[in-house]
Length: 168
Image (cartoon, rainbow, N blue to C red; front, side, top):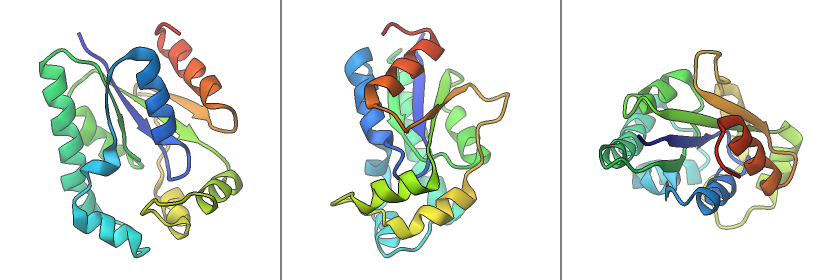
């Protein structure tokens, strides 16, 4: 049986950093969700234009297809994806029932500070407000863990692994 972790949250929460740290500890396959965006999405975000659902569906389907392919081969995975709305998470869960969401969150101030210091990423800090407005927190019936990112990466990973009952 395989398990599929989706490290989710708004921009600036450290999804990639946490996902890579989880991958190092667990040895599972890792995919950077941003790399699966169609070029048109990247261009739109780089221009400071928020994505609409029509933009997101092909991206979510690409992530789901990758996860499904790995699940079929009994490989556990870690993937980054903002997964801001329940309907997006539902789409990702369609790939495999063994999907668990790791919802990273932080204060608006912390996230803005992180985004302001980030270099070389297509996602501008100006889109933080639209992401926070779109965010629907995990609901009680969704498999997942919610972790505050105002700590070290190691502490976040320890919290996730402990909550999931995985070896630390």
